[in-house]
Length: 386
Picture 1 (cartoon, rainbow, N blue to C red):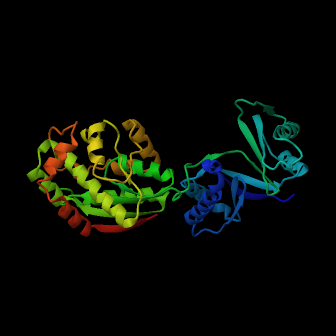
Picture 2 (cartoon, rainbow, N blue to C red):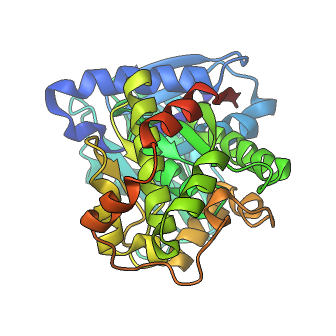
Picture 3 (cartoon, rainbow, N blue to C red):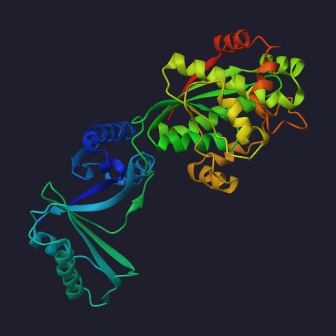
């Protein structure tokens, strides 16, 4: 009986995509190949599963670690591939050493297989009991779960553990968008969550040198690099905001400084989106977290752009956001003590219920078009790769 070690990859929401399902599957396969570039392996697609085979087993853990960051995959199993025939499956299972409580979980994807899933579970459960004196069936809280899948390619896959992956949709399946990337905890998490929904991420960072340090800029570059563990590559636009903030400080009411600043940032972000053909803007705002994130502030900020603005953290508590940041590996960098431009010239009492009318009145004292044009023309662009 021929046995072969493989990685069995499982994907989630793609089965909901109807006639477009094939395009999502194709993109997922491309993303897997890109993630594992430089390694030798074979990739096979069988309805409902992707099989990685013919790889060096000594680097199996490295492959799994990389695959866990591929959006669209929900699970990985270290599996053994055998012939999808009843006697072959029984023969292999009879060789397994199982002690303590166990259960068999069978999936008969190929309906041509002569036994139903439940019948196969019963047959294999008896095989385990016959060949392992200390084994005992427990269908609810077993020590060991023996998973058996009969697929459409005529093969059967046997494994114990299901390793969780990032989930979501294949990167690039939902288009491309621009993330406002600060040096804080929230914005990298927002970028991660929208990438998980299939958006390819570009980023813009506003810095105010010499009011903010070079270390603050390097911190953001590091955050972008950490995000590329999931998104492979980020085009990072670094825009000088010093002159704009100085003009706001000199010409606008102190309480409206943050509001005007955010409105100009959004205008610049939209212009970058139009130039780069990006479909939306992403921010890390959470409702009520700070003065610039009240419902009124968000409305005043939104009013200057026509593109969709995605705020995936809008209903999150700070503890929720911090937990994701730690999980994706950006938290330790985000808490480094380097200020970003949002803390420069910070007013003592920022307005929490601004109005569009008042913001527009104050903006008359600024040559916004010229300031934005100069900022964009002097931007620094970096391609950050994993």
